[in-house]
Length: 262
Ligand SMILES: [Zn+2]
Image (cartoon, rainbow, N blue to C red; front, side, top):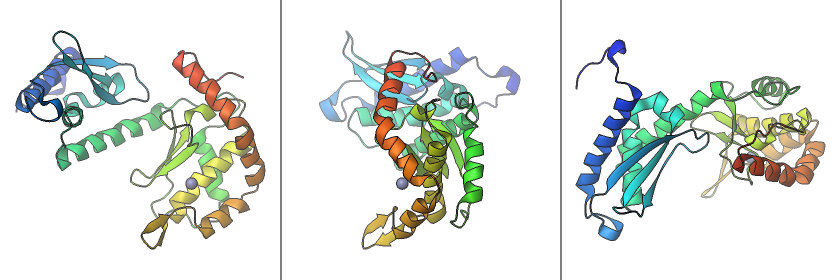
């Protein structure tokens, strides 16, 4: 492997072609293996301006058929040809084969790097909303639970959550993700703070083992959750308004319009 100095890094086009070539070599080794026992197909690799889909591969039934890879441009900007293990594991899965553990781990690490990058990149909430990180600081200050041993978690808006999840706390990444649909002027600060409080409590309290189950919303969790001043009113707000907020956001998203309006 040649050492590359900053000034002679390959251009993005060359690096993308290099990644494609390496993937093509992997594919050659997979000919006849896995579901359908496909021959080696041509690799078609494209960058897309995705915000919530990091990478995916699809079988394209043309003549000849290809594997069509779509990578988020921001991922490729971040990692370049380091995207290889992630793409390789996608390719194996597409063929119904199991990727090696190291390959999967490299893919997960890359996903974390990509998501962490968005903490900085995440747009600030709609006007006259304070920034999420400030919400979290306020919440941490007033929360009655003992602070997390690992310090305050990261927080970001995330567009990739399902409609059933307003937010979540990721233990490994020590990060709170709040549904992008809540980045809307119609969401009261009190409701957003209450949601951040719920996720922050997960960071503080962890889980209780009950038999072979891990219970996250245990008694102590529920007690502290209810002790939050705006808990009831916020619950009512989400019960009443979430389905509509989600529908509107999803519609704007699929039509590519901004979502921050009234
Ligand atoms: Zn929860």
